[in-house]
Image (cartoon, rainbow over all chains, first blue to last red; front, side, top):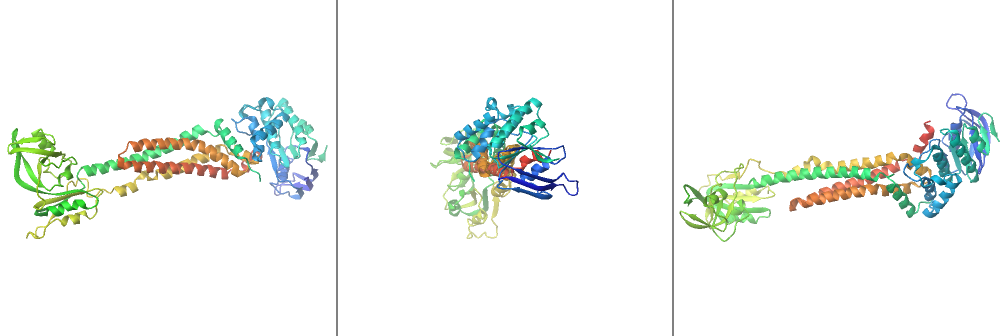
Length: 202
Length: 360
């Protein structure tokens, strides 16, 4: 179920083109960094990938992509609910019994380095912990395409490092992951790279 | 589409309640305040109305009279008392007799002859062992209680009962008087009848107690009311149906609906996030309904307890009305809150979460 772009370009009305002639194929199990200067259209490309907007030119084929998950730069959660509850919910939502859902949530919590705060309230988490929790929740929902928007934009460098470690572990699943970022270290944590100035690279 | 297990739904609702995420205490207190206010307002309004009705009735305003000197058929008048809804009826006539206390020879008590049903128009506490029925003022002159014997200048007489006849706008003349029972076959001067609730055509029925074979047909019988100072009719039903507080259930329901939608609105991002985490909307609805029940049920219990207290403190005849008022408000408020919850969930969209992305 790849996502294939060919000759992709977009602009709003008569305004200048944000990007043109973009061609790439996104495959499951890989994590794509989407970079480019401010105003280069990173957010717009995410919106195109999510299917919210049709491209101005070219084609964007999304084969068997039914579920699109998002992780935003502002972590959101239920302040008084435990961290692990946030990761457990997507499993419960799919009809998995509570006992098994907790086990699977705990695995993800470990994978994202959150064991020490698993039982803490969401409101007690640091910014970096909350962001990693959102990534774990995003993975738990098991989307076909996971779009991550500037995950380290609000974080200090040390905290961002932990989040970047978590991003590198996103590649293990069956999802296509696209991470829009300004942060070169986040880019380096990804397996592939789309530079809106230059196209797909490694 | 898969759906959450029942245990998972219960677990999520329970977790939100015990962690305070559902704000159970806050919303239970708010809804309790709404239903308590609504119930108190409406029950108070109905109690004021009932008090007005009691005042109207106890003033003698419900007693209708027809005057036709020497032309009232005692039997016919007594028979009015058999009409369904009529509380008492009886005929009365003036006599020249007096009852005089040795202690107050200068103020002899006028004596009226009445049919046996008449004393019940003035007092519910009259025994039927015979004797005279005295107004309170007259009884006080003799210093005698019902069942006792009055030592009058005219002789000893048993007192069968006494009645209160305050100066509250009712027709004067019976505040200082003695009533003795006479044979209903005689003719009388007046017929009195009391019905509660009031019977619309009772006045015309009163006219049937006037004999037409007395040769005095040119004198028209005079219809009246024992106490006309409160008006002719007590429009209890109309006033009940027109009371402002009749909107209490609707207002309680609307406010409860608003509270529930506010409860959802406060958590819209959380719920949008749950939808994004693939929680089916029907399961989200089930969880939210359970959470809403966690504050609706305690508030309804408070309202039920208040209703029970108010009903217990009401007159026996008003208890059912109070129970109905309370139950109706609680039912509408409870359904309003559930409806508000459902509407809140149904209008929550995954896209509310995406504003995080789009708004930046």
